[in-house]
Amino acid sequence: MKKLTEMAIKKAKPEAKAYKMADGGGMYLLVQPTGSKWWRLKYRIGGKEKMLSIGVYPDVTLSEARDRREQARKLLANGGDPSAIKKAAKQTIQKSLQATSNSFASLAAELHKVKSPMWTAGHAKQWMGNLEKYALPIIGDRPIAEIEPMELVGIMRTVEKSGTFETRDRLLQSINAVFKYAIATGRAKYNPAEIRMALADRPKVEHFACIAPAELPEFLRAVTAYQNMDKVSPIAIAALRLLMLTTTRTSEVRFSKWADFDLDAGCWVIPEEQTGRKGKMGKRNPHAVPLCTQAVKILRDLYPVTGQGEYVFPNRNSAGRVISENTVLKIIETIGYKGRMTGHGFRSLARSILGDMGHRWEVLEAMLSHALVNQTAAAYVRTTYFEERRGIMQQWADYLDKVEAGAKVILLRA
Image (cartoon, rainbow, N blue to C red; front, side, top):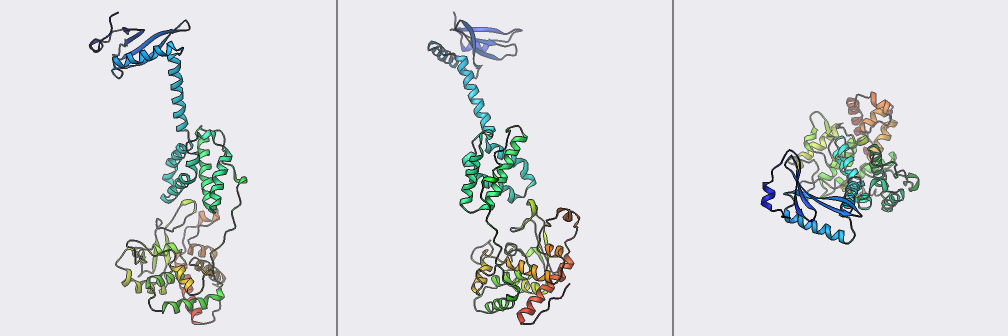
């Protein structure tokens, strides 16, 4: 039998029907009417004739096809079936690819891609970050349908040992969501993340330390005495004063920018994207803060010091950064209130005292930029009570001045 040559193969033209060009040893080239050329190997095993596809020309050259033919003949000589072996190898690859596409990591990434456009950037980053840190190293490569509850319990208990129970609960919510997504898309039949009963209870929340209203006069006088000392940073003391007068969060004061203030209008608008902003279910809104006359004066006095930069309270030792989160706390500790008062404590103190004055709870919640817990009530609230809050904040500032001066203040109902 005359064997094939590269020249003969290249010159082979398609015809109305497929035809074979033999090369010997059961191998031939099948020329299709479409012009495609397929390598085939015919062989017999167990008395039955079978056919093995070797590849497509010119992707598989003549010499490569002959090498594959010889490999197949060796398998036959050793009792193997080339077609069966090829089929088994293909199934193994398919299973491997399927396992990869249905792995916990791939489904987590898929869900993250679907949901992240509806999340804040911070939440999207935290959601995937927790999975990458705690879950993916352990179950990331596992097929979603093979993961067992005890594996997840083990992950959660590892997080519990670090004492970060809030992270543990957020992580479990994320894992739970991945399994629910897998079930919804037909990649899993049950959710092994229903393991709450096997986890330790969260420790009781310790509220931020806060002095009693009766301690306020002495505390304020201690702040003024500290402010009058030599070498006291005007940036640090201004941050503490503004925190007291606005009942905002420490992070909101730290990251405030001069562009956010309209001192003539007595208004500070904290942007929704600013570091430290809070929001229910990952949703944030800008928060307008009315500024009392005392707060405006503090900011005007500070402007010659930091007004040439972007941030109101810049870090004097690191360009482009703001004061440390411990700056205000350090002042409080220095004047003798370590463990008894925090920057956040001013929010609680103002809420209590202003509540005793009879101001409406919903207005005070708006003052603190709290989301309404009652969703039905929240749906009907279309105001931030800004002008009403302006009067309250001025009353709060005047109250602080009076108690520091030693005046006996009678809390009048609003």
